[in-house]
Image (cartoon, rainbow, N blue to C red):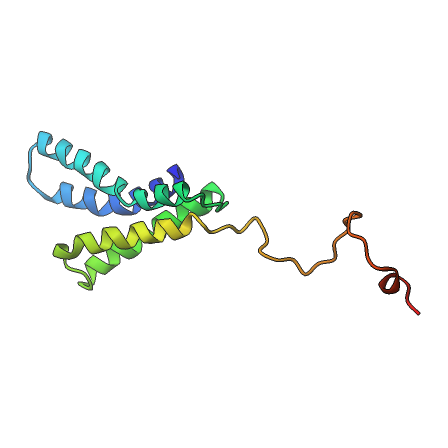
Length: 134
């Protein structure tokens, strides 16, 4: 969960630094902005936490979680940058990212969904008619 947050945080952090660098505000206001930013970027993680409460069994490694978090944050930034979402619709973006994080919690690439390979399990008994090729 932490890696998903770090990826999302990094994608959201670069526009914030650019905005703080170009603005003319006091150091205390910058600190307050950073605190609010950390709180605001942790809100979409509620979707991932909710999925864990529902016993999500996703099994993704830390690099993939960080990449998915960064991609999700970059897509959210692009929606605002290209004016597909206005800043008054920020609640919609937060809910959408929470939903994406909820879905990510159920994704698993390490465990196969179904396997078509032959099983070497000796506990599986085949009927005698299927075992002998006539």
